[in-house]
Length: 461
Image 1 (tube, helix red, strand yellow):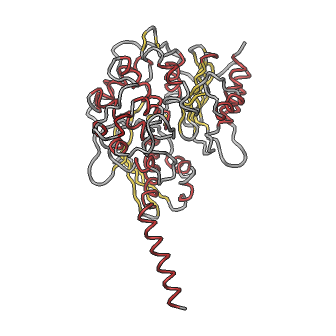
Image 2 (cartoon, rainbow, N blue to C red):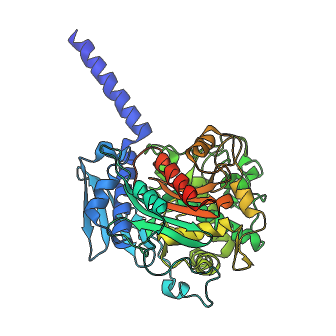
Image 3 (cartoon, rainbow, N blue to C red):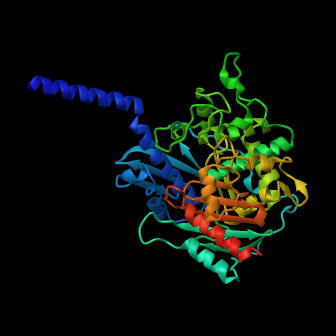
């Protein structure tokens, strides 16, 4: 029977080898090391945070937690690089470029480096259209109820998952009425928004729509899709905005999904546009960072290139809003990392929320196309996702659950991994920003609901 045992062993090894060739666990591990390298790089060199703390928090998130005992990183402050690996293998490198954050370097080819004078772009030719929302000092609330709301927002449970709140800013009637920051973070500290960056891409598409360069109803201007027999030619810009493109780009954050693997590419948008179609456009929804990355390429192509994209963002969005502490990152091919990688101070994120609270008008100037805000806050199909935002204007159970927590029915919000949120509440004239590193699978939605409910209670009639 000895020969039979070896046949079984051989079959098992063959199956494992075949599975490895198909699922490529090495790629999933490289996704993890890339995430760790990128986050340590950007939070160290842009946010000025402690790299060991960043590493501990980054390796505590789901998926990466399984590898944390074999993950290591090396930070070179002189070369401004961060390398991360698992057991010395699957090495990933992130490189910092002044004013542009970090970019992962894949292979020996250097990434595209923008030739822009960042400081010149950040120097507005005219004063901001948005009146200043606060003075230079942290706004300590005078209302005991608001102080209690901030206390609760920063409370930590005795056992994990920990909330790790980094910043909270409350804006009522255009003014900061309460804010608080974790140690080492202040009013000017740029903090990573993760997928809140998708809402910024929404704004750039809205600006181009206002300028007549792009419309949601137009076929997506992707040359690779325009073949006579290519079903992707039916995909419209709105389908990409609402994540109903029908492309095989579902996001699960497993390390094996197309969204995760996109970050192993220098040209993330080229990877995304190469996806096959698995459903007719507009009929199926699934969360998908690569579809937003395609929108980022549409913005790039509409204005003429990477440098022009950066100029558009500062000229038409950040400077009019008075957003000063912003860093936009680009991939190795020069496309805005529109799905994930923008940093801004908590106050700057709040100013962005005010653009949508005020229906796309700032200082009497319409920045976003008329009806843009309501269009972007309207639910997609039977989900609680809108267009670059999540929304309570929906009958979806998640939306109803948030309403029960105290977040109003008319609210919509930018949302990023680990609980980054800008909650926009027109009926309450409120914008609430919460930033942090919560590994709770919901991004601490209950904590956010309590914060919003208590803020409304303190500011309401």
